[in-house]
Amino acid sequence: MEEKIDILLATYNGEKYLKEQIDSILNQTYKNIQLIISDDCSKDNTRSILKEYEKKDSRVKLYFQDKNLGYVKNFEFLLKQVTSQYYMLSDQDDVWLEEKVEKTIQFLKNNNADFVFGDLEVVDQNLNTIYESFGDYMLLNDKIKKNINSYEVNYLYNCVTGCTVLSKKKFINDILPIPVYSKYVVHDHWMGLMVSLHGGKLAYMTEKYIKYRQHGSNQIGTEKISHNFTTLEQVRELFINVKLGVFGTYVKNNKKFPPSIQELNQKALNYFEMVEKKKNFNFKDWNIYHRLYRKEKVNYYILNFIIMNMPFIGKYLFKIRLFILKLIKKR
Image 1 (cartoon, rainbow, N blue to C red):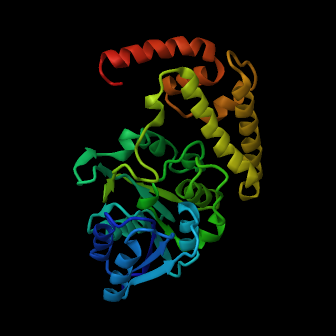
Image 2 (cartoon, rainbow, N blue to C red; image 1 turned 60 degrees about the vertical axis):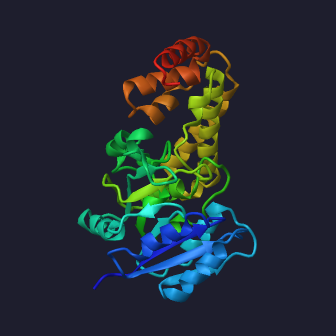
């Protein structure tokens, strides 16, 4: 008999695409599901739509929040409602292919995994393909392949897309509470990291069972912010702020980490706090940079090293690179 799987859907002002997404979940080939939905004080027609589904399908369970939690804490609330052995996460504006649940639970069991995440197809608001592979476009697939059997797959940056996740319930206590210290560490980032650090095995599905809709109102999407920058200073500021947010979050929650990684968290935070103040050259603690980036491709390693530690040189190289990209119409 199929084990029940809880599917967690956080909603907020999602009336435009919500029906299409809920239909794609309820029409899965895998039928033993419970769709648990928490609405975060929507001001549009979302709650009326949800009540309609609650009436016509007993697998739908609703919660309406009295005050706005924000999407991270709304997902945290949903995690606390899980009663089944397995659970999945869902966005409110995507479309699931009908075999998504069936194929994902099968993949988890075949790989003896505890936490599965995967690739997806990026589409526009009308479901026309923009990018066939989110992982390729965001340059994640190589990083995942290289680090999938280590906590490092989700340590330096987030490689987990939440709407692809299937996980075992037993790790929820390790995940909670989800920190909100920085916008650069959200629920899926934290979940993947905590499961791997607490003995869980992560597995990655290259098959794509979600149409990941981009429509201009997404909380998290495919935009590469740094592509809009015209100076190295802007790129460097973003890169450093991201890492300050990531390692600041880790240090504030250091008890969740093994002692050896607690030490690395603090050293990494100290390093990025230091390089933030260096405007031209930095000659200290290069070993910390190497420890963090040692598994990256050589060109990425060198480029980021220059951005962090040699911005005086880097700004001229950046201008040349930007000129070339404009010349070939890639900017």
